[in-house]
Length: 638
Image 1 (tube, rainbow, N blue to C red):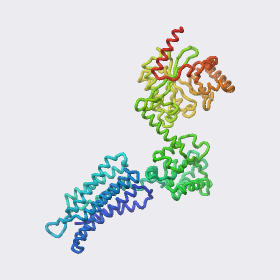
Image 2: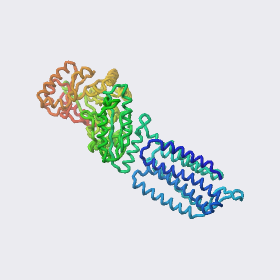
Image 3: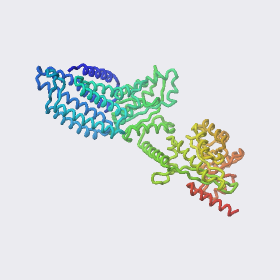
Image 4: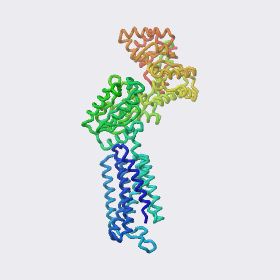
């Protein structure tokens, strides 16, 4: 028997280990498990070579020693298979207690097999009745192979059963390694003079290294910091182990480098990176181009380190520390207020996109109330998804009364969703979250389509109706495809665009004015009209009315109420009405609840009234009945 192939395997593994140890690594359990497989395989190949030498020189060493070494090789094969199982179970059993209990059972089974291997007899198959050994066989070999086969079956079973829990790349790599081993074992069985199982193990290690365990895959090439993938793996591991830790997110907004000249920014950025790399008792990560993360597992020094880092930034950068960089800071003193890496990263994104976060201060300490908001938002997002997927989105209609014609001439379409128990969820619960998450685009399209279908099934002229108002959120106004998508829906339902009035808000005109104006131009050419909704809230300014091509101005409920409660507001509203009438625009006053309020608004020349005085928002069927009753009343009056 020859050892050339085994020697090639050893050389291959030593080369891999050389590259592995040169790379900066993060302390991950999967890497520790990989090293166990690595050394188990390395020992297996070495013992394979020793067993060949022991058998060839058995007359010198003695027969018992030669067979003991040969059996030890069989034991190392079992060790490689069990370590492979252990490597895969790191993903499956995140809970350390569960993982240890499972592995204790597997190693006890392996120990029983090891005792069986050493206790059972081992025989030699000789070449042509000479003293040269072709291969070993006998009960000892059968025990080892049977146990290895049992563990192989268990591995394949877990790969299938726990597919969702195992890293997809790890599962693929382990499957490829096992395939290489099986093919090698089959070839060695067919050609007994070719001993390639050990070399196949080395090839398997190379597959794991190149596909998954190369430490370089966890590094950001441009900075040398650990990357976002490493951040997720590391924090997920800490959560699985139920370890508390602190995180500091350093966020470089557009204004962070405003005091640094353009030619210096890159060098200062690298100076910052070098400083982060040297922070003791912590790992530093680049989570995004403008966001660095620092994770502290030493809770006693975490707050001290955070203060040191902030002081270092305050002292300035550059050759003479004369350049000031002012990032924003998100500090989470105790990560155990969340329980998953996904929630932690989502929490940072959530706070970052909240425009109010850094308006007054650049340092935000994240407490439990922020986490409570996150969990609530995720629940609402899930509720929205289920509502849209299971047809639980509904449109309610609130009638609008014309003071000129003294009848209902239009209505505002208002979105409602139902939970799994078919209970109505108030719009105040989900509208803001739908906008933040971007789901408002799909939700708005569903509402618009429902309104078009309603108009098709219930021709508005039959009820004396002129149009339906549909709200557009700020996010929808900034959607470049809004006009095209809405025109497609109207054409699909063969809707006359004169029946559609889209409501925009003042905030939409400021945040996405260019895109909105483009959408408005296309839709107005098609025949759609527009209203300016919620006039009187936020940054009310008559310039909005001048700039925007709208036909109707809607006074917000708060503005209407202020007219009756505040003397100054009364004069402001009367002046606004006078100017709006001067521009030949119609006015809708929202929030009218009493006859006195209605009469006052009518006397002021308000052309349309909306509020509980006439009706609350009604489901589709109830709205139709309301219109029918209204028609009958008008006919009776006539």
